[in-house]
Each structure stands twice: as structure tokens, then as C-alpha cells.
Length: 231
Image (cartoon, rainbow, N blue to C red):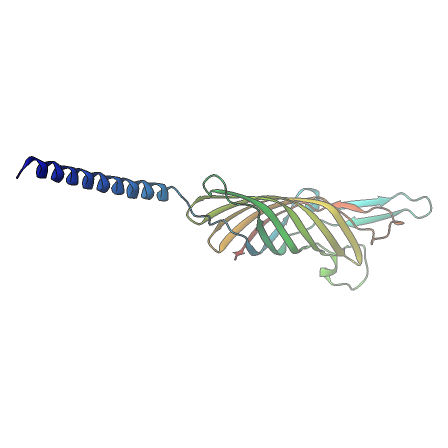
């Protein structure tokens, strides 16, 4: 084998080795990058929740409203609320892409159907034949507010939200309303299943939507443990 053949053979083997080495490096680099690219599994969707409502603060005690009117003084008793139930239907709306390598995403928690009730004992001063359930507190409303979802591992999600509430209520033939209620919420969910912890606080004005009547404002703070699904 002459010198020219040896040189050409050496160059061929060297160039082949360099191409192989470069291809191998690109493959490893691509695999390395892919292993750190986490897919975005934080997605928008409907949710359904239901569970017990536990009255908190003065909502769990008797609240007495005294109308000190000159010609017609009146006392209204709002007896202590007991454990009730809640049904909520809403939608988690995410805005923009995930951040922190798709471990974190921001959006809006829109609960567009929030129905709940709290039990109560009848007014012992009345002589009517009303059912006990007439003295329960019934509520229907909506809640909207900012949402943060954290995805620490796999399909485990932690939702944190702060919402403003609007409620109308009925109790013992009196209607009430509240446009300044608030809620702090945390969901723990895995795939479809979720458990939510809600603390709501605010007041309700039971004056039958009549501005000429005195304000009958009572506390309606609650704590809720809700089970449900996020689709």
C-alpha cells in the first residue's frame, strides 16, 4: 500500500469518525433537552363540586336585628345557622402559556352556578304552622376571581383562587342580597378527582330588596369541604 492510499484511507476514517461523533452528540443533546421539556398538562375545563357547608363566626350563633324606629320598633331574630350543603358548577379559564417549565399557570376561576343552604331552628315566637325548612337560609349566586394552578408532579394540581361573590338569599319569606362577598379557595386534584377547601365571608341584607326598609344585615361566613370532578 503506497503512501497516498494510506493518507486517503486515514482521512476517510477520520472524517467518518467525526461525523459519527457529531451525530451521536446531537442525539444525546436532543435527548437531554427533551428530558427537561415538561408538557403543559394544566388545561382549562369545567368543574362540578358538592359537599357540606359549615357556618363560621356569628353565622353559627343567634343574630338579633333591632329596628329602632320611632313609631314602629321591631326586633328580628336570625337564629344560628347549622350545617348545610353546597353545589357548585364552574370553569377554570387559563390565560397564556404555562411558566416555570409548565409547573405554573395563571387564569380565572369562574363559578357561574353556586347554590347552597344552611339549616336553622324555627323561630319559637311564631305560632304559624310553617315547616322547619322555611327558616333555613337558601342562597344562589356566582363567584369570579384570579386563579393560580401549581403542577408539582405528574397530574397532581394545586389550585389557589380569590373570588368576589354575588348572592341572593331567601329565608322565612324575606329576600336578601349581597354583592361584596369574598372567598379564598384551595383545590387539591389528581386527574379528574378533586377536593376543595373554601372559606367564604361577607354579610347578607334581608330587607326584601326594599330600600325603604331598615337594613337587616347579618354575617354569613362559612367553611366548605367539597368533593368533585374537573373535566
